[in-house]
Picture 1 (cartoon, helix red, strand yellow):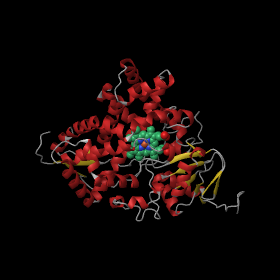
Picture 2: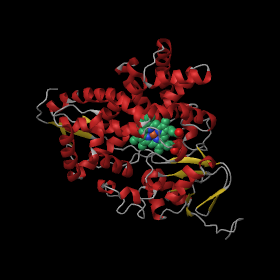
Picture 3: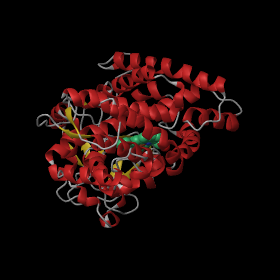
Length: 458
Ligand code: HEM
């Protein structure tokens, strides 16, 4: 078959309704990846009744959707529509509100700017890790999700709000965001469900959104009253929005902060959760990581200057993001009729870019499910398809928080390893939770912290 320009039109691989629904209801993350990898990266069409999205995983197709034709694939429909009730109009959106927020927010998260915030972040993380001594001394395992989320949350909050927020308030924010991320699963699978009726998850989502707004508003108002020129994001935002627009709209600044906080903390904390079961399964990686951290950090406190020296840690983090990309699916909607890989895509169709699937394509990642940090050694990365590794997305919407993630995650892991020998108290296999905006494990994970004899004082 040929199209108007004379090129061949290919049929997508179709997964029929009776096979797609049971598989996706049971385990959307794993099953979606299986459908994509079984098709070898070809475009797959999922028949979910009235909703018939295309699954995109081949790096060439990823490049087209996220980079080359990005403005024909907008963030609308599935996922984005339910999420909008929380994020309003800012950088996670589209059009003018996205463009102006991106222009303002991007400079606040460059490598240089992040480095200027890193010293404060290092102090907070170190303080929080020391608090885990109680667990270590008593031989009690920590609840990894609770501790990782709480530490990451406090570090991100420090970057966003400086000293304006108490720890108690900061700790109220994280669970509300987690509720939002995990309660939109139904609307992601059934995006045509009307908003006039309540579906499972709606009540929890709306309640959490209201609480988030109630916490964030007073913080902005306080920053506005204090009018400091400090470097934390809320002050910088107020200043820039005031300069550019003549007025700093509190509601707009609230949307900006909620967007950044949501993107930053949930993704970072969830990525780190998977690390501990991976290290349990790969003692050789664990030993090498431990050796590197002890060699670089020594007996002194972990400082941001250590981060670029911990090359193996960086490789482990990259491999972690390959196997467990917390943004496991990036939904888009086609604006005009187009083609992807020869497959006709009609305007209004939903297109699912799936980093989780792309990272499992054998053609680009031999032994794809094997955790192997060596993939990131030396110049191997240069020979790879640029769009075969997309944990941070790509193109104009690419994540602005990559530097922040690598610095924060490295500080957290190095602090833990320099103080304890972390180990799972018993083997725990993690599997992805059904649905949800981020890739979170279904199981609760516990970690035992064995204290290390150290020369320096706490
Ligand atoms: C492991 C950590 C992280 C992962 C996996 C991650 C992943 C992503 C991905 C995949 C996107 C693209 C979304 C899309 O194309 O629709 C994105 C966008 C974004 N990320 Fe991250 N992110 C992480 C950490 C952070 C951090 C620490 C920040 C803090 C500043 C952040 C802020 C943002 C923002 C504001 C956007 C929207 C950019 C735009 O649309 O212009 N992220 N992130």
